[in-house]
Length: 189
Image (cartoon, rainbow, N blue to C red; front, side, top):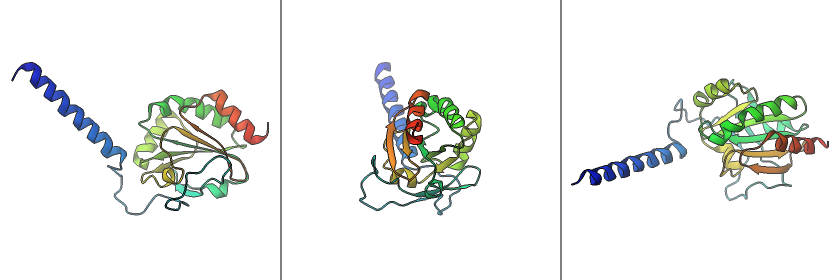
């Protein structure tokens, strides 16, 4: 065997291992705590279509990284900006300062909740602290909430009016002006 053949085999093996490890992580490996008790619940029915603009947002209850319970239906009365992301998501990290700035600017008028699909408190808490994020951060280690919203790409942003109806869905990183425009529309500005 030539050196080039050995090098090619090593590259193929390493690439395969990296891909398999990534799939394992995305599909639910390494859940912290080992508890069989879910950390989030959602009102989702098997075979139910994904929520769409103009439809009620699926209700859910989750526990934030600081131990506070968040239930979407209890936030009704104020618009909600519901975001789905992950600590490993590059676009989520890039938009985090803009999201935080907009969340602070609309504090008291809009509830902002961030759900971390497939991740545990032990992963999300240091990430949120490191980035200085102050909005409620809800780990969703079993993808319960993400599945209720049929999240297939992150970051994903759901803009929900004060009566609990989804008014807009934005998949991908969002800019400050785009987020402000969505929130202003929810507030009737």
